[in-house]
Amino acid sequence: MMTATMEAFRRSLEGKDGAVITEIAVSLFCAKKELEIQLKEYQNASNAMALEYRQMRDELNGARKEIDALRKQNQHLTGIQTIQANDLFGRSTEKTEDILNQVIQGDIPTKDPLAEDAVEKDEKKEKRANRRRIGDIIPLFDDLDTRKAEKKKQRMDLSGLNVQNYFDYDIDKLNQQYGENNWRFAYWKEERKVELIRRSTYLKVIYTPIVSVGLEHRLIRIPTENALIPKSIASPSLVAQLMLDWNRMYLPLYRQESDPDRFGFALSRQTMSSWILYVAQTHLRPVYEYLCSKMRDCKYQNCDETYFSVVLDERGPGSKSFIWVHRSGNLANIPQIVVYCYEKTRGADHLRNFYTGLLEMIYLTCDAYSAYPCFAEESNGLIILTGCFMHCRRRYVEALLILNLKGLTDEQIISLPEAQAILLIRGIYMAEGQLKGFSPEERLKRRKEEVLPKVNAFFDFIRSLDLNNPLFSEKLKDAIQYSLNQEIYLRRFLTDGSIPIDNGIAERCVKPISLYRRNSMFSFSVKGAESMVMVFSLIETARANGADPFYYLKYLMEQMPKHLYEKGRDYMPDLMPWSDIYRRYESTERLNLVKAQAPPGNEKPRTPKKRKRISQSA
Image (tube, one colour):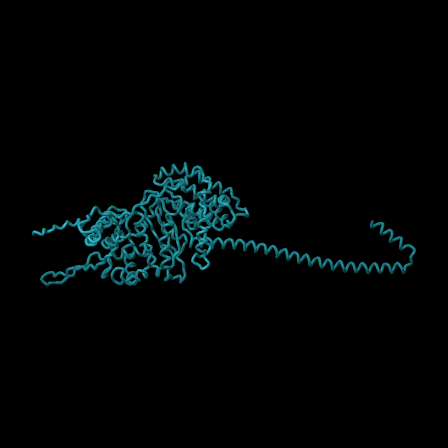
């Protein structure tokens, strides 16, 4: 068509003179120039639009990335808030059924229940009435028995208390109510009450002789033997009680000072502090060091750590210190030992120092903190790490807690990968829980038969999950990655019947430190922190072996002054809470306490005899 147009234009020019053709050419040239100018303007406008489009596209992509980052940050912060609120105001249980009940019933708190805008009582009652139990909706596995054994109601044991028999009656009131000689005692109905008498404190005055020697009558004073603190009123029983309240009641010394009638006399915190520091550093340190050496000889151990603060730290105020916990394994037939160690850092240097000179292999159960594998690699195979299923489960719980489950049915909640992982770990724990009381050899055999298939099922399920799934939260991805990275350590308890399934026993030993830290906030000096870990180690070791911490501390403070200047440590085995000598000591002390008399009661009365009437004739 273009060719035909050109031919028609050529024919129209034929026969015309040069001036006309020139005029036509000039007009066409001008039109061409105008078109070129317009084309250039269009090109410039197009380039500007393209540049603006690219800028808008880049801004849009940046906004999308920012929105995605903010969405993830919001999800992360919401999860942290939910977990923190659950830690502060929620139930502290880690039982699987209770965890899932919390999620399904919506019991996860998101705000302080003491706030003014907290849920009203009527709303709480309505929410409580609509609760759903996990046992009604969980698709239970055939090989899991979820029925809980009924807890037998334990009767309170009052056999260790002294008895006062008191017969409550009023002869005159009975005569007035029923008539004189018209009633009698048929039998007595027994009702028990436990009365409390505030602790008894007395002043023990010790006289030591001053003897006259020789014809010169030289006066010599016989020194007091085995004094706990020279020239002090402190006794083993008094200091033991201070230490026990410090540990078991989590009472800082300033709180103990606030009760001036506690012992019948005022006792300042400075005095109590100086007593505890002196006794711990002088008398208890050798026992503590002996416990540390015994711990290093244990083949099965648990370890954990927690932060702590010391005011007079040379690193400056606000420096964070740490307390490490070493616990002997509770499944092996070895003495139960708990050792706390104060350190200024959380690095692997503590492990290197604590296990210096290690000659035999040990199994160390711990969490996934990097200091443990770092130290294990340096140990040339002497440290074998074992994992903690409790930490593994906790990550899936956190992933489940941050989800928005509104509008989901019970079945949909249980079908979530987070809940499925928790249920599979639950099955592992249920199978392991049936093996309590077995010997390590029998436990290992049963683990391979009953627990191993459930562990395999858990890791098969974890490996079936796609980490690139966009529907998975970051918490869930972290839990999956943790499980895969820790698989070799989590499976290690299946190779030895004395290795525990988790590190719960060490975490429970951290609790006294955490409760004390919450009450006292810090220790004033490094020496105070070191004394604290010594006292806590002895008390928790006594409790782990079934000994009474009060009697054990009292026993140590009575015995150690006798050995203060001895070079050897041959007497140390007799000072351990599992020794026969200490057991006899505690039994004697308890017997002496039982022999202490309760306030006297009254005698059992008889029915008053009828009075003889005097005849009128007489």
